[in-house]
Image 1 (cartoon, rainbow, N blue to C red):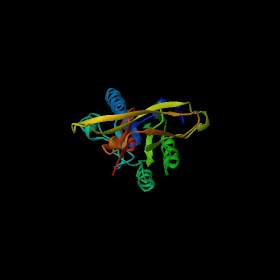
Image 2: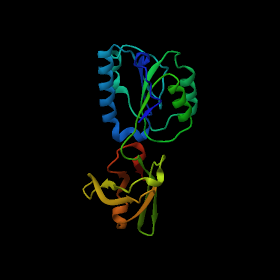
Image 3: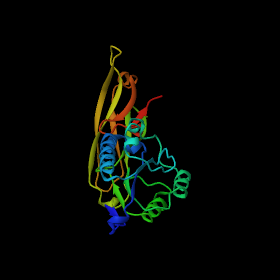
Image 4: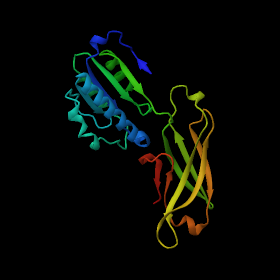
Length: 231
């Protein structure tokens, strides 16, 4: 969606690229990097300066030649946490007075400071928000009860949550096979009903197999939150 559309093309100014950069960005990170590279190239052609900020590991806004950002993209990585309110406030305080356009790559997660930052950016020009097609997933808990492994998975739902469609994924139990090699020991499908932000599945495995499980992992969304280690 385009927020606060700017009808005067002459005052678009430079380009600020903002990424939430939390754990929820991991599944779509290669696509985000591809989009950033395309935006940098377009800005180069247009003669616009660019600033790039990862809200989960922010640095002061610094507009510069877009070519100077390209070499550093390999070090731009999602973090295991979400943006922090204090960092957001510092970023808002340090915004320049000039007009600029913003491209915001959102993880579609709510966090304190998100709305104030949006309003602050809108004061400077057009804010274009790009959100993932599917909700971020995380393993909320794993419990062992009388030979049954109960795995609870959560998904991020915010705007129009009651209209969120049904969604499926797969949880894998990883560990060592009888020869000691790393292997996927079991798989179980997980289905979120429409409008639901959680789903719990039961996995029945023999005691000998349970003893060899090292961690559970959401197969379709590799990220820190999608992995649960077994103590």
